[in-house]
Length: 135
Image (cartoon, rainbow, N blue to C red; front, top):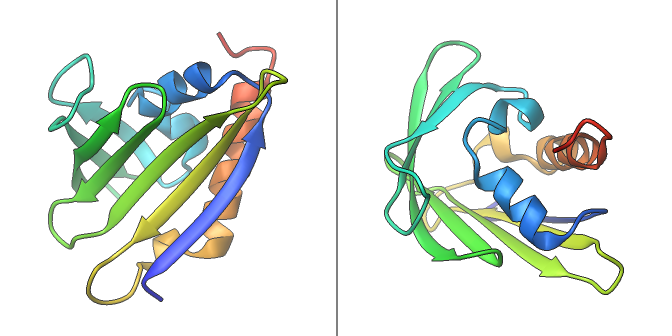
């Protein structure tokens, strides 16, 4: 499979969901296989590099290859061409539809990005960001 696309409605304003998901300190709160994440610069923008360490200690690098503040950002994995695009669509009732799209131009999307894994990740994101502890 070359593409996996999932959407979820989160009961927060789109700018809040955008800010939460783009902040590397938050990633381990909603992606179980990420132990920590950092960027080479703040604020995040086109060209920013994200370095993620998984729970086994391995590092992965992604670069922001498309960016529109509070609307979307795309990360491209540096060593294998996986693309991950987050699109944030506000609704009238202070909620946000988040579309998560991962694809590769050649080959097959990694098992780490399976439909089941992405659904679990998005459900956890929804739970974390809708919680009363969210600031």
